[in-house]
Image 1 (tube, helix red, strand yellow):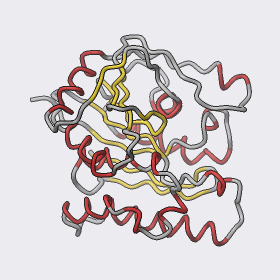
Image 2 (cartoon, helix red, strand yellow):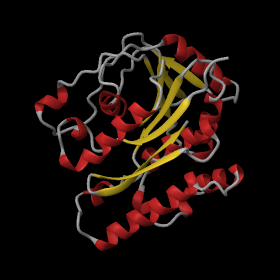
Image 3 (cartoon, helix red, strand yellow):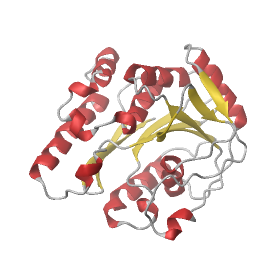
Length: 266
């Protein structure tokens, strides 16, 4: 029997800053290194990034994907970063088949490369770039139920020792990132984090309750302050759908002077 997938949601920080030695990303870098050391090295990685939306859901299918430097205004070295991992067309096909089991339309994309939501955290976790990777897009509808369903579909992938990663950020109010010493900002940031940690990690919730809370995430305290647009939250919905249980471990940390969290299911 194939070894079941591990699932990990990570908060990926600001663009390439974690790779440029930015002090406000120290917690993030250390957390990613800790998780990589904690879990068995995967045979392949399936990544859902906040930085790709497509209709229908798209799946990278190139054996040799390039990098997309989808950020602006950073030092030249940010555009010379490399992460030469292989693609995995066989896994891409399995992903498409799995999505079809839940009537989710998808397409294979042999042209698209890996965006920074993928290569920045993986360069920290697995710097050798020796694990083949496939990336899946979000759907631009940003429908939370659809993204939970995507995760549920991924449970059916028959692939030994797969690591499923959702790459987003539990706080993503771009205007508020520039405000470091505001009690109002900090209170709203913490209120949403408290709700999110409780929702994902509370073992007393039934899975029906947990799913319903995630589907109704806009009703959480300061939800729209933390996520004016929810593309950085929805990779967590995919991760939950793939795991369908409370997280094994929660990592609460400070990234870019804001409270953020990461979740591991083993």
